Image (cartoon, rainbow, N blue to C red; front, side, top):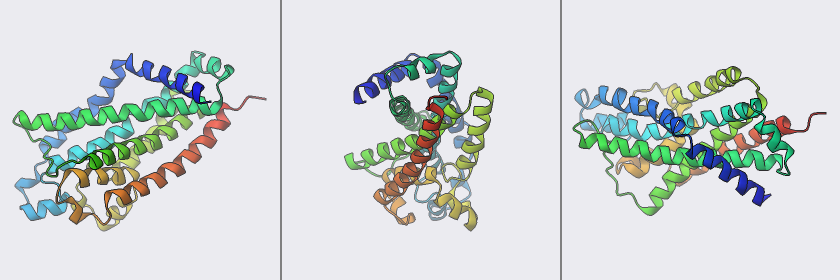
Length: 274
């Protein structure tokens, strides 16, 4: 099984590498958000420093808060096309030929999941790099006020990987279960948009009503972004009830639950038709 998984994962990664248009498309929306929305909202002009730190949970500027949130945004949106690829492979007969090979259903599902986890990590760091670069171009830029240690960098990567794995497994299961691209995008948008909009990825935490803060605190995107912000901003730890390790455990619990549901759906869809 490991040999099959490795071969299929390599094929999926090659397909991603040979499709730069998909990578550019995945980056287009976060780039526009950073340039337009991130630059347009200047909370520092309306709030004093103490108020700003409360609103942004320790981030020195709203753009810094926003840029860290965009990492979570990218980790989710980059996985949208993974399930769509399954549908197109089915339409072109590629999935049927793969399923007829000695590869097991677990290998087919797992290879696509692994490839879908790796891509968002690279995109996320490209977004962070762009956010820093904007500051050197005379615009608002990401200001990391904490010294990033090896452990901190590993926590950030782990948060992105777990979040990506969670949504990649879910969207893959939807892709294996639905045959038409139109239906797929309708379903994933019904999942994707509410989850993004009820998170603290982009909206300032301190400006949320209490009920919205409660909802956002259990959102997996919020949990992943909290890990990133705690490692990027020195004063952030004073505004979060848990440390990065505890948030990672909560995120892992979300991912395990989602993976179990996704695996059941995928196995059902890949089961031989009687």
